[in-house]
Image 1 (cartoon, helix red, strand yellow):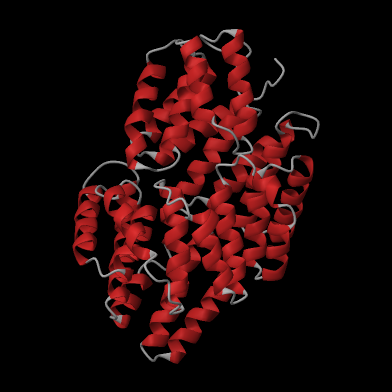
Image 2 (cartoon, rainbow, N blue to C red):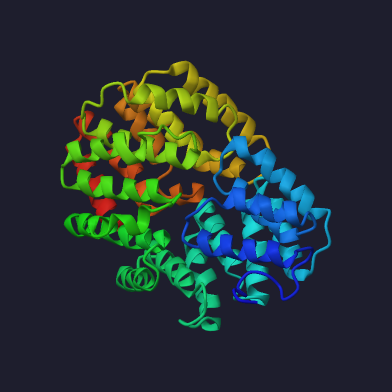
Length: 422
């Protein structure tokens, strides 16, 4: 097999044409480029019994944490579960089954078993690390890849992706020098590896190397944007660098252009738009009517709480626009989530709910209420996923609330804590 990094020697139910298409899609997905759903649908149309074709499609629909795409992910899982599978494929089917029912940690554990037996299964590594990210398990985010690395070599197809995954794991565990080196090496090997590009951006963000960050992202924009469905998040990182340099005009231009100019309704993209607008809101930067359409989209997206991290970013839009009814509806949805199954119940209880309450209080000018609610998340905020750079918005909000409350001493303590984290 020309690209033997994800499938067993004899993949179940695949014609050679379907397998070739699958492997081409996987090679692109490691760089987050192309149109994977359309092409994989062609593979399963050619070979309806292709177990991993259905699984891969299920992963793509479940990975974005969008409530609207979960029914399709469940359908792909049902199709895969009804087909024959060898032991590696069965591990993937089990992982997808847990994933589509919100049991992310169980899914991550299932893929860890696949990786232990098949450390060169790069799809298991990639989706496994995504699940570690969604659950805030930064140690496994690194070690899942570290355990597999001895089985890889630089001349193997897909090695650049493993190196990029490892770079992000190193960054999230604070080994910034090693993370930067690994990320830059991965990009040198495969310039279109936007995940590795993003890992280096995280290092530069955490080290407050803003000028270096702008230079890194603008050095060759085409390499990480061309045909990439991860480009919006990388544009967001560039916007953070501009914001860190107090270039709010540049940050807004990026928001109006590549970040949310098309007003994507995908949760990941809406998160980036909310996260940037809220940071500007904390600085009292006028943003015109930019919040309103985003709040409208969030109102439709979080009628049910499926992922607490998304809830918090919806709450930013509602709080900034004074949409109290939407905040109340979101809290009711969170109540249902807390009483329901899956990992989101704990995420909401520990982090999501106090964040929504704190953001709502901030929106109403109740600075002390915001500090009290957000403060409850300080030691557990990683439990609802996201990266250090994304969760930094919690500390920024605490600092802003303390300043507005006139408590300079508390604001300085929050700044010191934030500096220590970074």
